Length: 319
Image (cartoon, rainbow, N blue to C red; front, side):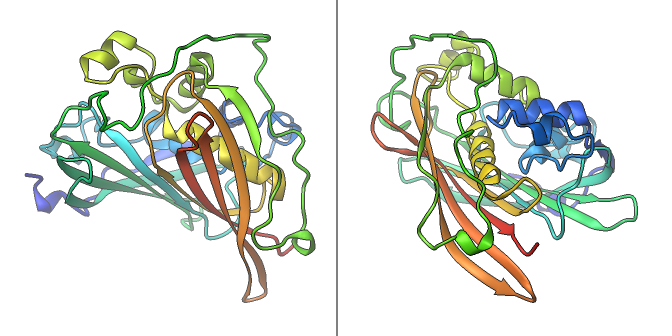
């Protein structure tokens, strides 16, 4: 039982530098190796870059680091990431800025899972302020744990495919380079760029992303450890494909313009799964003089068309 007095308590403040090399490394790992991120010394941060903050610089459920979160009496040895969301009240933070952040356990909810077992959902809220004290971003990460061990007989939804990696080049891929930038007047509801298939997910892709984001859980790269934890193989990181979907979106509507990001991780997926990315406009709004486009984006597994990651983003296309 988690002590309810811990809910809402903030951990210590920490600084989060939006460093050029780290932002560039993250963009490359998220299929966004473009000049805006590679060359601009004051580039906007990648919309999913905040996922590195608590892992590398701050505090989280898995990395309490002597903070109040060490008092959470809950088994987090095999956590699964359920959702990740960001809100940006104004423009994205830019390279060269240093933010001050603080995190809290915002809520704890228990449910009975559709595939059996009791589930616990823990939501971590992290607030980010600039040097003037202005709130520039909020991040919410939802972790889910279960009392039942995973298995390959149904509750994971699929089995790992045969893994046959092929490396034509060690250069980072740029799968979204054919997506054309669109302005407000060219957008239409239910329309979007063509789908983009990236082939089989490789361990190389996953390790590159883990190195960029700092999330080094061995469930994603150590086969023996994953199997000891009850998984039939190494599985993908939902934030990897969610970050790639964000790259798809900013290639389409511009790196500067993202205002929200809400990813939901639908299915476990594996090294060797073939993946496809797509997106569409779900709403066009004009509010308080701003032109806002709401998107829905999905990453699907080609073999069974299962949705791996579902992502909703909003863009401000006023200028």
